[in-house]
Amino acid sequence: MSGGDTVMMEDDADTDKSGPGSDAGPHRGGGLLGLLEVFDRSGATLARLPVKRWPVTVGRALSADLVLDDDHVAAEHLRIEQAPSGAIQVCVLDTINGVRRGRKLHRRGEQFDWSGEDDLGLGRSRLRLRLPGMSIAPEQVLPSSPWRVVGLTLALLLAVFGLSLLQAWFKVTEPGKFAQAALSLVGVLLGGLGVWAGLWSLATKLFTGHPQFWRHVRIACAFSLLEPLVTGSGYLLAFAFSWESLARFNFLFSIPVIAAGVITHLLVIAPQRRRGLIAIVAGVALLGVGAMMGTTWLQNKRASNQLYLSALFPPGWRLVPTVPVDQFMREAATIRQRLDERLKAQDEDAPGDEDED
Image 1 (cartoon, rainbow, N blue to C red):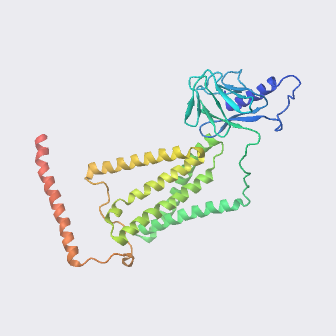
Image 2: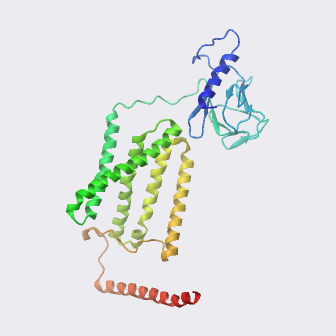
Image 3: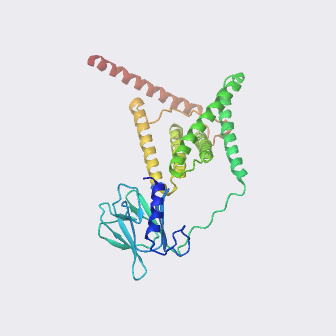
């Protein structure tokens, strides 16, 4: 049974149970006692039931007023009724999974008041109640100038292409080959952006019904510009203050930027699951960094692949005092001493390896 079938069941239920002499035509907003809405985990609406009388039952059985297509919901999962005092009460019926309200789980046979300010969880769905007089979100203003969005998208695309061409210019050794490299680079960027944004828009279409392709393009472009800015700032600080460790572990600055970009894409799909998505992506990023550094340590006995500062800037940008020649020669000698000790250790390990063979 699809979501559309569920909505049809609701309309039939209201028509059949409204009693003789009632208006069997389309529901009008006036006179409703409330509105029940059902959402899935991504926030997509599965069903709505205009409440014209109390009590109302929710479950999978056709006898329920609101029929749900969820295997984790009982035949008649709960009943919502109005107490003599006017309060809305929820009675948990014959279910093994119960009803979740915030962090509290109400078991079979329990009863509690429900003001409608928070959603109820039953099975894999969320149930929301809107009552007359409850405040609703203010009306959103339609974009008056869509050309601003188009202009922002074009500006981000041009900025990404410009930055990529500038990086290619510095890498090309022969100026005559720059045109060929630029054409291939533009093709790769267009293809990469199209595939990346296309996959995200496909996921957005599946969960929300709207692909929002160009929004994903803007997100990808923005974080593509932010990543080299952050890493370049790290290299600049390392050069200016002779922070060797910052230069070696500068790759760690890329991880939060990439993780933030993935989170921004995911929030387009499921904005209401912000905390969970941030926690999942942050956990995956930390595990990835640990695995990367652990593998490098096992292979090279160091946590980073970078041995020295690979990005050089104009000498006038350095903010630390220069090193005297004598001090530089002494420090260079220690480097040779460490290399000799490493070679000696490798020579001592070699006979042991031959004996094992």
